[in-house]
Length: 347
Ligand SMILES: [Fe+2]
Image 1 (cartoon, rainbow, N blue to C red):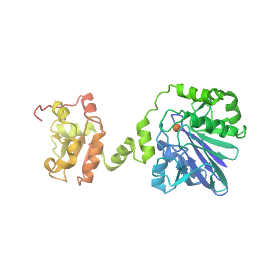
Image 2: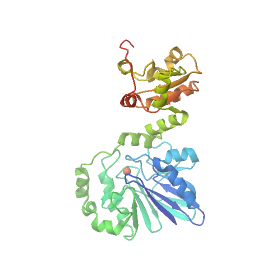
Image 3: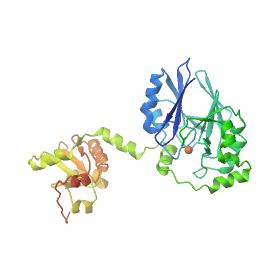
């Protein structure tokens, strides 16, 4: 078996499992920012990806399964209980995935989430967030249940061969894996072997909510886009103009650009780039015909920091303003550079 553990900067673990003889491969728990890396790794190993799998609905990072599936047509595998509408293959306890000559056994292990599962393959088990090194997945996020986690551990995976290598979904320490036996012996959470003690311990954990909790759940449960994806897609549609170039054009008296301020009225009135026209992002489509009469005009869109302007410039492109570009940065940076602004209280 070809086996790679890929670590994201925040400790999430993804796994690439490949069959040496058939070259078929599966990716487990891919993360959105590492999509190119998984593909490069598969190519480097001479593997062809066949499946994408999420061990559960992640609340702390952006899963890449949906986006990779959209680009490649590969099927996404999740547990039957997963809320994600984009899962192509919904599996359940006792089933098996065949990847070339590899046999991946599915164990449903609810507790961290209702759709959590562990994957048993050869001498190892991928435990997702059910069992971690020196810890367990938390049970206080949506669909978590400490009672179920107790069953999944003590009446489930902990009864397997203690020599099994454990590769979890998160690693907070400087290690790559552990064994079931080692965790049974030394994992502090597993020392509470009575159900009520274990459940009490889980309920008393006072853990910080993960960064991006809402957005990660929204996108992982629905297949919708992250804000970063929306901005990246908009940025792929437009080119940019630097502040220096805009300033040069203003001072040289070249009148070949229309500066379009897409912030709110108060912000525009207080300070805008000299000569800028005002059309807030919220009214862009409905008022564009009143404000920009010539679709061949070269429009330079700006906002406060440079994000809304990128979206707005992409919208203008869709509307037929083929020469719409976005300012590289926003008026906040423009002011920091000491470039001039003007105000118009009556705007
Ligand atoms: Fe998780």
